[in-house]
Length: 150
Image (tube, rainbow, N blue to C red; front, side, top):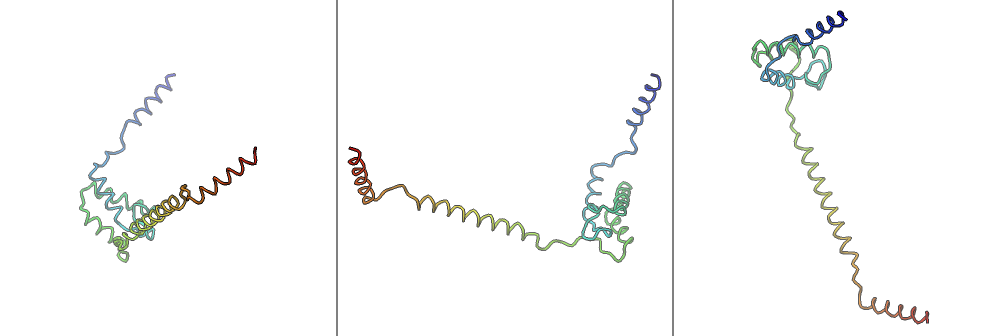
């Protein structure tokens, strides 16, 4: 019983002890900004944030450490660039980023117009109003049917 109590106290103490002080929210935002806006030399077409490479993980840890030390963002980028002089770490701006929303808006508007026209045509093209000749023909047929029942 004494051992269980001692083991519980040890686990409780270890669980309450913090490994290191957490970074402030401002530092966390700065780290995320750098990591999300830096191309990864280890994963073509990805940023350091989305690259699963262990080397990218090391770079993220280094960035976190440098931000914690108070190193300015341009200096951090210069340090990273010095590691891979032949690779451009900047992310090229997307020039055609507006195309997909415009195409989606155009197609959805076109679909709405086509569906609205179909709906209005069906309602107009199938009226329940009879013409006078149709009414007379139906009356005559009804009279014949009733006469046949007598």
